[in-house]
Length: 72
Image 1 (cartoon, rainbow, N blue to C red):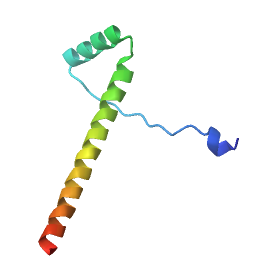
Image 2: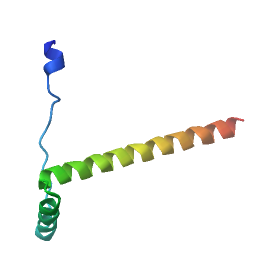
Image 3: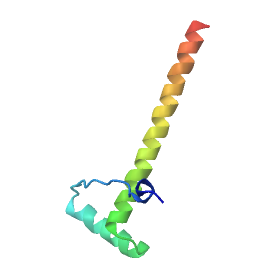
Image 4: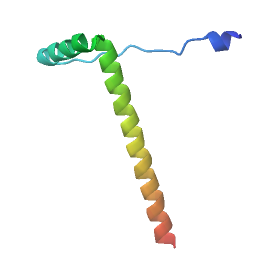
C-alpha cells in the first residue's frame, strides 16, 4: 500500500450554536438511539447536503431543458 492509500480524509471542525432546549432534545434523542449528539448532527447535515445537491441538479436540468425548448 502506498502512503496515499493510507491517508485519512481531511476533516475540519465547525461549531453550531443551538438553543438550550434544542440541545437537550438532541441529547435525549442521542441517548434513545445509543448514538452521540455529534453523530446525529453529522448525519443530519450530510442528509441536508445530499438533498440540496439533488435539488440544485434538478434545477440545472430544468433550466437546460427550458433553454433547449426555447431553441427548438
